[in-house]
Image (cartoon, rainbow, N blue to C red; front, side, top):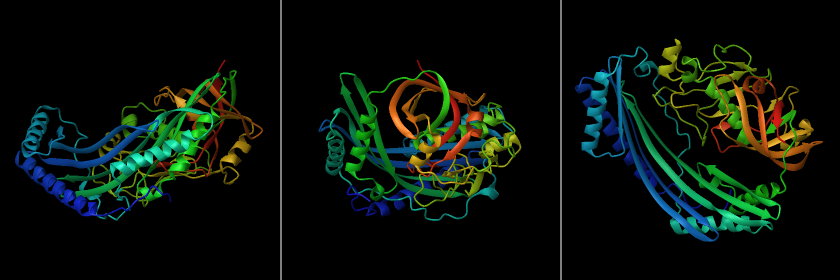
Length: 460
């Protein structure tokens, strides 16, 4: 807990309920009108998002932004012909124009056998409180003060020569998804963040790094000082970075990059890539893709989870489910459209994955913190940043620019930059040696650091 939290959950709770009522009434009305216009099926997604964003730099206010964004999208089906349209204006005339456009599009499109709403029997019927609603009662003045506190904490470190600024963001949103099955799902949630980017420099060069925190409830933030200290320590640690000669060695991804590795796995087992036959993991359900000790499970209804929800983007009920079980791919990640294209059933993942938990451990069942993983690696590369888009879901080829630290005898020896790391995702996933207990909870993919057996490191 930190000093940045202020009183929460005041009158905005009542306002959010009223906005949800308004959006639900609008969605149901538009669906009725779509049916009257001849649509056999229809679905609506409507949302209202509000926020405050403050950026400060070198002790001065750079930007203050208050936002209130509205969104409305409609999809109609005339048989298996589909039409979609959207607007950011909830005025009745704009809504009617959006309905007219969607219907016009549907009348002129080709029929698609996989088109249509998710099956009515799969609609969610239980809507538990997942503890996602925590409005942050912070005004502009306090947000500026907090940003300055964070920046001051970072700039107080000897060796920090400049700042790219601190940001404070408070956000909340309400949304409704409804369809002609009679389903109406309401959601409300908050997301708040703090961040700081710093620069260190001397006669040998300059380095930049940052840190951030992202939470559902402001009371869960790390303190302003801790965040400033973390950003400064990361920046200063990069000073004196050098390149490496080309070699093969073990590689340890820190948690915020480890979740990216899991994200590549998700991309390869998601419906769109599979029905287009653009994945290196085609036809791999029931086959080993990771070490036998490793499990990855989806937990969609975690309290305060970054990806929590009781239904997906089509209203399909979410449920706990294994993705990787004993190293074996247990299922794909599907919405109803991709499931029909593949002759399968939706996995409740229209709109993406929900909270994904990568179990920590290793072949010998040990639980390793970050220091333990360094010791296990012995000599190798700790990667803290990757650059570029050199990842192919089709072939699994992976090649990205990287920076981090060279590790010798389980201890960080010196910072490195200007290198490229390369391998194939199939080998990378199968070659995971351990997953750490240092879980990064700022994302819906919950993973600790991941130690890989070997990658090619190209440098000088």
